[in-house]
Every structure is written in structure tokens, then in C-alpha cells.
Length: 402
Image (cartoon, rainbow, N blue to C red):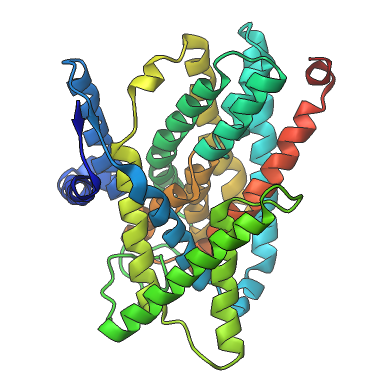
């Protein structure tokens, strides 16, 4: 076994990003279907490690940097959100949230229905539904433990982790092709395959050059650090209460308060270019570490019926994004970018959604409304509504009887 320490893992993650950039630049298929660079590089490395494992060689990474990078990314999302922009997106956020809730309901219905038809415990259907797909590894681990302890479901945690891994991979792969299909075949208005004259904001086009200075960089770094510290403290205060929230939501909330509080008091205006640069660096490194450290062999342990359910969920996600998300969001270019983002966090996680949308906007132009709506819904509201939907399903008679 080869164990890479902190520095080795950081070097590996950087090389994964460079590999992904090279692959997307040189392989027309990846570029045409808007596959995010961290996803392309990360999956190649994960597949290589899977091949090495067949020769009894296993490489392990130090993933201690992964959580801070994820939290830093969500801090920059909060620091990018000003109330004036949020007010503009109020109605759009509400409509998109309804679409998201609709998918959660469909995912669980599909999971339970297929599990029952295949002779499996309906709880397995829930685990391969919104718990692990929209919820990700964290939600999957929590509910997996609950299902094992309260309902006696064997190997629930292992199934949850494998399903979440499956969703993370597929969420990063189908978003770009879905957006391309909508843009090319539907000829959506407002889309041109070239750079738009408006200067992109925030995370819309991460490769745009942005002027920075050492002092402004340190100022933004300080804001991110305060968001991480205060968000962690807030999470500790709320732990065990009725208002308990994931740490990243608390960090995002503190970022929003800092951004708008300092602005309202006239003390400081957040420099969005620095926030964007640091946020995109955190996002890219987080995804690189997450994907290159995937244990793809865990997917091989899934039984055929579970693979069938997860494959069906992937198809449903793509169809839902095309026929529901795209249409209810206006059937325009912004709606196509939102559909790509929905695929990202509908199967994987919010960082995957952002990476999907960046791959699209890098090619077709910025979409300000998409980068306003998706982080809000994917990072905050989805965790709340997902818990409600899951508990409503668990209240059904055949679950209550168990």
C-alpha cells in the first residue's frame, strides 16, 4: 500500500487538475459534451487506481484538506451573495425549489417501487433515492446508521456510501451532455457559442483573468477564515437542537451575513474577483481530491438489482432535467444551465453542480441567474426539504409497520 501524506495529496490533486485540463483541451468529445475538467482528470486517476488494485497495489490519500476546501468554497458562495441580487432571484429561486422538491419525491418513489419489484427491502429504495443522491455521502452516512439501528437493515451504511459514490460520478458526467442537448436541439434563446460582452461575475467563467493584489487577496482570505471559524462555532451551538444544520450551511450563512453586514454599515465592500478566484481554486482542488480518492471498487460490491435502481435513477434525473427543470425555468439558456446544475446536485453534490455549470458557461457564455439560484437551493434549501420528504416517506404504512 502506498500512503500519500498531506503534501503528496496536494501535488496529486494539482496534477489531476492539469490532467483534466489537458484531456478536455485535446479530446473533442469531452469538450463537446461539457465534461468538467476536475471530473475528467479525477475519473482517469480513479480508474487507474482501480486497475492498480488488481495487482494488489493500493494508493491512499490524505483527505484532511478536503473538508476545509469544501467549507472555503461554500464561504465564497456566501460572500458572493448580496441581498440586492437575492431579491432579484426570489421568484426564480422559488420555482426552482419546487422543481427540486418534485425530483426528491420522484427519486424516492422510483427507488421504493423498483426495490419492491426486485424483491428488495423498500428501505434500500430510499437509500438509493434522495438520501444518497440528492443528500450525498454525509446524509447517506447518517441515514444508513439510522436504518441499521432502528430498522435492522444490514449493510445500510456500506450501501449508502456506494450509492452516493455512484451518484457523485454520474452527476458530474450527465450535466454537460444534458445542457448540450437542450442548447443544440432546442435552439434555446439567448445562447451564443462565444464570449458574451458582459463581464462575468463570481463563478460563471472561472478562467477569466481577474486582477488581484496581495493586500486585497489577504482581505478576502481573512473573510473566508472568519466564515469558517464562525460557521464552525455556530454549527457547534446548534448541534443537537431542532435547528441543527450541516457545517457548510452555517459557513455559507456567515458568509452572507459578513458580505451584507459590512456593506450595510459602510465598512467594507467585498471584492468579488478575489472571492471568485479563491472560491474556484477551493472548488477545483476539492473535486480533484474527492474524485481521485473514489473507491470505485466499492461500486463493484453492489448487487445487480442495486445497479439497476441507480441506473434508472440516473436516467430519471436526465429526463427530469430535460422535460421538467428546463421547461419550468423558462426554456431558455439560463434554464439549460440550471438543468446542468440540477443534474450535479440531484445526483451528487453542490460543488459538482457548480462544476457542471462552469463547463457549460465557459463554452456558451455567462448565466448570472443560474449561479445565483443553484448555490442557494443546492447548498441550503435542499438539505431541509430532503429531510422533510424522507420523513414523510418513512411515515408511510409499510415503513411504520416495520
